[in-house]
Length: 625
Image 1 (spheres, helix red, strand yellow):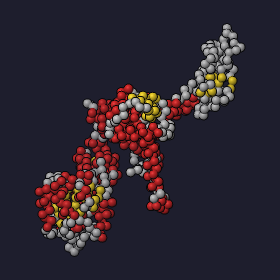
Image 2: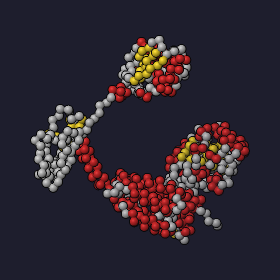
Image 3: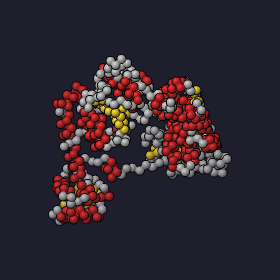
């Protein structure tokens, strides 16, 4: 008898043998037990998670006749009746599997639907299973919509796809959708151990852990890799053989790399990388293993109680988690993920791996968290000490609260002068104020501009108790320029002050704007200006923005006024504006907004909702019509 691969030999025959899809098994079992059957089912999920298997088990549950031939619809098919045996062997006439990847046209779909008019020959239900249904063409989908919505009572549709996003919503709305989840590595490992025990194959748990991670959520891939591992290991499944077969990197190398990165040891990092190259290990697998370890480290750093006692790598991962700060762990994890995408761009993948590891080392903060803390403390002390010498006018200003102009100052004795110089009796005394938050004993004297410059310290200059010379550091008063009236006007615009000339100027400007006689800078000049005075042939405008007072803009505005019937010359000055078309428009818009808000707030229904249900009006959501 020919050998049957493990993925086919150990395909589940009933819902009780399925693993990792308990949510789907429970829903289908309850529906079959209560006979609340839908006419169309859609199973989605990645490859190898059991979509086709669930379809076959469902077909057996619908058509099972029991060992005595008297059975009915059941959630536990017997597996020995004629219908169950025929479905398992793929020769049941009332169960049709269609591969939509190779039969994706409207003709193939029409041929399948033509069989729907005939009642089942052997079974209780006719089941159409369409695999990879997302591969069907748009016309094929449209041709099946009517039958899919209202099929005969004896017909059931089962659709399976790995890409439900490509299935039209008109099809999705006609089906019960079940999403089969990827298998967890622990689930795959337990199932592989069960299969190998049934096959009497010796194995190592660490080898099964590698196979489970290599399956990437697919039970079929895990069983196929196990078949390959049995052949590679000569009838045994050992960790060393499986690691060599998969090209996986030994976790010990990964631990050494992370340990070297934690200590900033670049030499060890490069040596380990070269050793992996000589062993022929995969660079992508190296970064993948590092990402897995760093993820475990980050979890332990955030939740120390999340350690897995059954994992033999748990003690080493816990040691590395204590060795590396949490922020560096997050940074290394992100760089490993992004580094995998760079391997294909480099001419040599191990050169790219070396650069990724060196980048991890380069971005590692020297000195660790202790040095960061010391640096932050030093900056925190230096900031108030540096800001203590700031003054406004002649009054010292210290952070964080500015001292008032009449704040008293603490006189400090003048610095000692060299013996060959004599202190002038009329020399002004430097004034100083203690810096808020400065270290004790550290005072910076503030010297006025008309004071004599402090002498340079020499060997005869006395030192203060903290080791600093009396005149080593001086503070110079900071002169703060007052804000200009124009800046104040632009920062806080004055309120609208209507004028008689403003009514006339607003109507003229808005009429030109509506006709698009003025655009761009000329329009802004007209909108932002106030008509101050006018006579028979001359008008004077005023604007707050000097950038608008351009000769070209004035000439174009004059031309537009001439075209509108106003034969005048313009003079534009810069100054405060109280009445301009722009301000009138803004005031009108605010008035409309207030009116709209009043209508909404005073509405009885709105008030009832606010009173009874605590509703609130979202600010900015009201727009006047």
